[in-house]
Amino acid sequence: MEFIRSNLLRRHTSATEIIEIDLPTHPLSHLIFTIVGEQATDEATLAEILAFLNTITVSDVGKTILSCQSEDLYGVNCYLYGRPPILSNNITTDDAIRTLSLIVPFGRRCYDPDECYPARAKGEVTLYAAMTALATSIDVGMISIDCVQLPEAHPTHYMRTRQMTISAPGATGDNEWTLPLGNELIAVQIRMTTFPTVTALATGVNKVELAIDEVEHYYTAAMAECMMGENIFHAGGSPTTMALQQLLLPPNIVYMDFDPSRDGRYLLDLKNAKSAKIIAEMGVDEATNITVMERVPVAA
Image 1 (cartoon, helix red, strand yellow):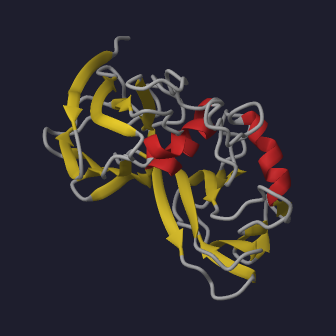
Image 2 (cartoon, one colour):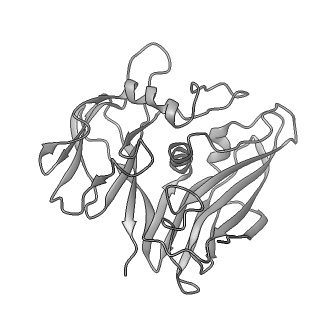
């Protein structure tokens, strides 16, 4: 079996714009979306580099395959690959070239011919990257994008990744988040605004439960601080906010994991469910970003 690795965009100098690219026609394993920047005076933090990319979307004639903010895609990378995306040149030197590569996935594993995005006609699958103004710590911002195709693959499934922004509920306490039905859930990534950093044990979400057809399943009660402990499976080591060390995994991201063994045996099957919801006990009245990763069958 052969793969094809090709370049879609080469060192494109970007500012506030939407980059639009039609993707190749063979089955798609993944994209490598790389931000290149020249450091201005002092070290650019991971958060500042990520902010250069606002949102990234891949759609198939209007059907969403992937849509999320850069911070959430970073977290999805940590979840899938068990390590943080590569951020180069962690030095405090003026004009140092920094690169950050994010994987845009179409399956749980890269190069998997059984789980990737199927072949489509030219012009049907499109990437949209909404770029924003550079942080003051970065001088020149460029984008390079590579693509990996699997021309001999005949996938049975692909991975769909969609971000949902849940508005502040108006009070603390229980808040219900509805999940999409019809497929198998791989994981739900929860990105909060508030997480303990000094002395107060304050979390945007204190605890989560899962109810399928009004019956508890999988998660009957999971505390945010314990879910953070399980991030050892997703990035390794402890999160840090020191600029030179850089973040391994942002401390406000946790996962409801339905594929902990990475072999599909625990996937949450919602094909026949009538309702599915997360009951989140809010510790802070704030908006929450959740990213839902689904395993979707390829249409016959």
